[in-house]
Length: 289
Length: 53
Image (cartoon, rainbow over all chains, first blue to last red; front, side, top):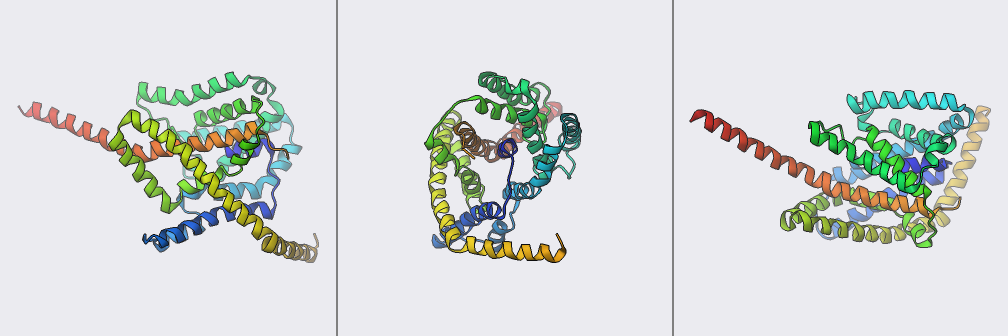
């Protein structure tokens, strides 16, 4: 969804934007290491290093950063190609992804948890925005119904045939179509709220915090224990309330991160970037660009 | 670029859905699989016992 939104508006990459994303990851990582050491929990060296080299849980961050770096190439293609070429590229890409990423699930696609998959989503979002008048004319209600349909369809197939359909793979056509219609449903809505904007700019923190290597094991244990103690129905109520409260907590914590980033920018980052840009200019002039 | 609240709302809801997915599928998925395996083992045991008798 985040990639679809990025594709819809188009990424305009710069070093500061990339650093901001990296800072967001490292801020929570350092914060949780310090916090866990303070309360006397054991933190292994692997866990410490995992946050810095983006271990398994943070696959999204590194994939997104690569997309961020490649976005000028994609933007140039989007601007210069004709609708026919654009559509051909998309059809070829998704055909490959569905066969090799969803049905056979080759390593190159890794169920869609890679930059390759992100490139397809980025191009798809821009294509829909530019050329798909019919999809854009669908009402929010219809888009939402289509989202529900494409979400339920693989579950229905699972119950009828017993085939899992690689249900949560990002390379699944069901996942891609349901995400697209989910996004289009919101795109058709007309909402204007400063509170929503204030909360949304910290939404990535929910992902970063609950999947942090130190937090994740406690998160899973909490869910399992609650499920065992409360049982099905009460667990559903608990998990919904937990999601809202945890989300609010992450957003509030992220405000501290934003303040730290702004402070760092005004004191260090801006000065470093100024020198870095001069260095790059000098390097380019030496190379004759 | 002006931030559109509907798209921002989409981001928030998506994140909450990701959290719910991880709470249910990743946390309980493995657990439920164990239960299914347990049921399957019991059925297999019963079938073997009935064949033996």
